[in-house]
Image (cartoon, helix red, strand yellow):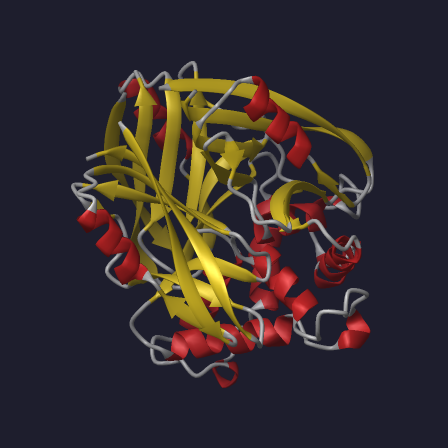
Length: 140
Length: 140
Length: 140
């Protein structure tokens, strides 16, 4: 039984879904993990981790638009406004989605459906760097 | 320390919460798992996994109605419409809920509250088959 | 490899975010856990577990206000009303957030960002006691 940790840095440039499935798969391959769990967690509360469709990019556009309508960037609606009109909505979107996902690995493959990708969902308008902690727990 | 995998197939017939607690409990019992984690993940992004109340079935009806109002099935609202009016709303509902849940098992029992059940939350109107991956990691 | 369980009781007095990061950290320290996963799960479906900002308390007020507006406590909107006007909205808020979180522990530290805390998000108006199951799986 082994445990391994890895911090993936993702540079973001505003609201977008950043697909990092390949980076996570590469890490599994490089370390020859066979069976186990990868616990992904994000060290921020204004961006999320989600598993979503990787086929039609329109799905990602629709997701961003929907969340912007559901959680308006309107300073009049919030008390916490000092970090910008997008910050409090970003915290709410984070609460509505996830900051943590556990992935199963079997026979060196992450068990994702054919149309599933792993994404960082950036909710801020600014450019920044996000850290997604990868923690493998299992066998190699 | 052992790891076991099992794919549960659930046939769905439109929007509903499908309780599969018994199937998961049976798997734990049949395999004599004692302590560990069951990582559940769904291979689709238009249906969800949730732990919800199992007492009053009205709760499930209210959940379905609420989510349909929150995420309207109106093609004018979305770009991704080729798979039907219910498809993009299903992806959004998936993002608003979960595609993955980790359950704790102690002394051969899944640690759920008295009123908790494990559900597949189907967001599509169509009839289809969903796969819920069960991955146990622990001791038997 | 060890597994340990601990039930944290949190007394709640209405809608609020209850920070229990210190209690979880104390449990890690007292048991000298080094590396592993803590699976947190809540035995109720009318309160949630979330990781959120721990710096500005206004963020918590905004979260509570936002969720109350998103899921109105209006009996006319729901069928399940026998447990009070706040009960069905609490189930919906539970579905929109999380009842389970897996935390990674490395070198005896829970891997949280500087501004992250672990919260019980109480959705009911009543005073009650909530149980948050802690399940550690790893090495000490």
